[in-house]
Length: 254
Image 1 (cartoon, rainbow, N blue to C red):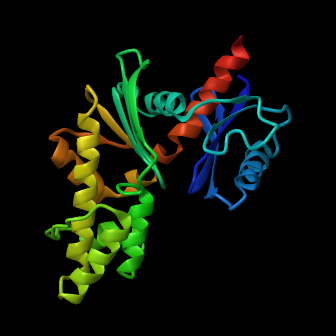
Image 2: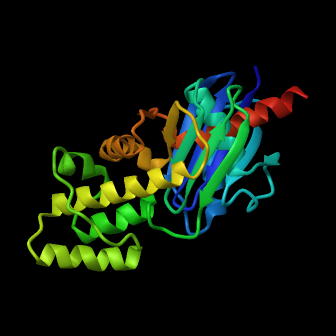
């Protein structure tokens, strides 16, 4: 079967997949450059290295129209739905939280898109928000699970990035433990995400994708607010790129 490449040019990271059938042959991940086209080119050259015949390339994400060598450009929503279904075949709802946006996608029993919501106007509730607060407290997002494990969340009143940062500084000055503040931030984000999901008519199973899906404490709190199981996958951050590669396969069969 022909190899295809899907690249998801996100605001924070650029993800890529080299796909053969339903099997991932190669993955690519890097921070998105201040010139996103450079990151796309790096992904393309890395993924196609050693491949004799030029793979069909499908681009998605914010930067999908920034280069002229792609065979196809596709919106993120379509790609994330397809990618999620390959990662978990019975997925009916996808919640994707990336660096600077979040989206909820509803699928029917056959995996067809039925509805979606997207928030790309406010950083609150995104990976960027979590990163800002973590750095304010002198830690990194990758350490959050270890820091907040078993910690009672301290309430946070603001979800605006600017005001929340000020509130976090005030709470720290008042002697509130940083791990309790971080747990409170994650809990507030999870509650906000649950309200976002509730705006759509959705069904389970729910697959959590995007960079934030790696945070186990976020998944646990989100499941609590939804009163529903929340699943993820080791390749959840690649869902958009995976869906783009699948679209390339379908295009090649025509």
